[in-house]
Image 1 (tube, one colour):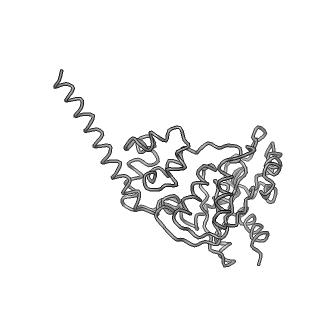
Image 2: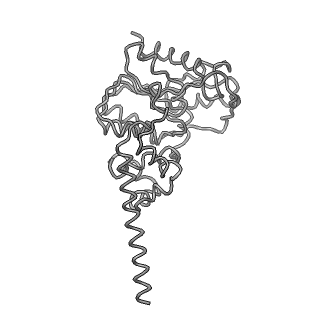
Image 3: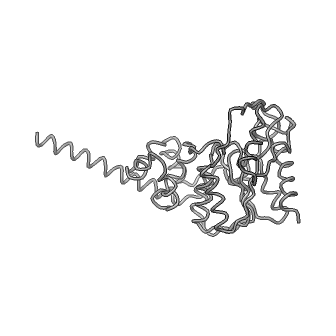
Length: 293
């Protein structure tokens, strides 16, 4: 019996040791790559200076064309991420401040995501390699129910989100295989009218009266003397429940409503995402309204 217990203890200790070693190896590799995605690009850079940063979900990523800002002499980058929520958007901005970014203006897409405060599992996990090295990442995740497991159990986060930050992603980071995420200054153009869903129903969607992460973004910008421009971006003409945008305006009067600036279906790839032509029309309007010199 004694020998059996010793054997079990050896297995447990060996497993813990392997987990600690693998956790350290994966983390070291993630800490030295900056050309895979927008999160690692921010973490592994410092002191960047921008006139304009774009933040939000795919409705930011597909709708703001940084090149058009640069043609006006404004250094810009689109840090919008498809599938992200305001949880991740707030953390992105916090990480930029931690990395000593100097930002004059933030354009924030905040409309549909104002209706929720949950994190996006598929996007938020990309911050987890840095949870032991970044105080803001650690602090941001402390509000989550699974924080203790993610923070204290070695290698747990890499196993739980293996499809996002597991062996494959670690290997591509190790060999510095770049992705297209940083092309076009972060903007992802949707070409032409694709076979996307050209109908949408948002009748049951309601903005939260106090969205914690939107309020965080406002506070961060105020504390760091960043001009915050929050906008609602266009949707196609076949949307049911467009009064949602009126509800947002009532709850957050400082948000600029641009949902009807572009409406014709020919300018959309899907009902919630403009194609490249529509994005350029929309960006031109934003430049005219906020950056006309």
